[in-house]
Length: 347
Image 1: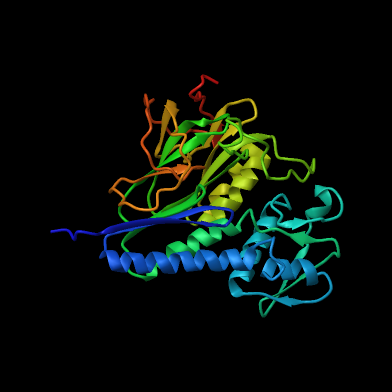
Image 2: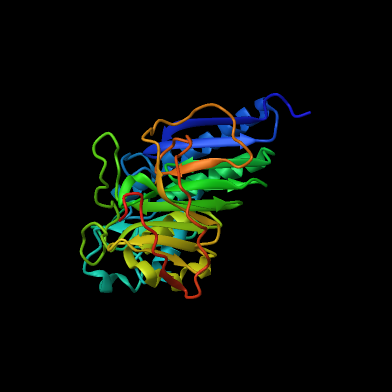
């Protein structure tokens, strides 16, 4: 007989969003303790990597690293190392440094962030400041997931405002908002032992039903990225998925060549409204062309997850949707080509 309490789910405001952590398959007291430890890990990432706190590692680097070496926490160093590697792999398109002089061509050679053994960091230019918002949230999800696994939890999910990772035998169905109409559902993606991250225009249902400009800055125009309306990346780790959504938002189909190096796949909506997917990006993707996401954005803080759980990217609600499902997408023969799915408003 199954125990009376074998699932738990809670949410807290962290990382500028709501972070939801759910766990299943162990006594309730053990799940609660594991979730507490997972939230502690997320809070630690928040404390270390906030760009708005002068006492954080990022705050201290922005104040001091242009003049001398600054020692940071191993987690901060790990994220910066990943960011520098992605900077090199993308010829400077992915860049956590702000205030770098010159156009993008001047940024291709090397990152303005220099890493030195002993978890020490310095900046190459006095004007440089960093913001880890494009990668740290995914790292926090990975750390929280690792806490759940280290605590012996067999199945779980961490969702930080749409950047999420799951582990265990269950398949989680993730609902993706349509970036052309955030009140609508673009599609559903099945995720198992993997991470998923999405980027697009900012959306506040309390302000407007329309998506606003993306917070991602195009290094060519120094303005909001407008080449792509929204992108979703699936990868083995949430940190990588989180970072690669920015690459897809900035380069579109050109990102297809780099994604396999990270075991990643992607789908995105272009500026003209076409839906594109990498060859393996359509695996486990099911269209819901006329589905509308619940207008509720209030997180659920209690209750158990079902074996096939659901999560909404861009919303913490796990309520059901009304749908008329379209056939599942089939893998694309080319590296990336348009799928041609319409949104719930027919666009």
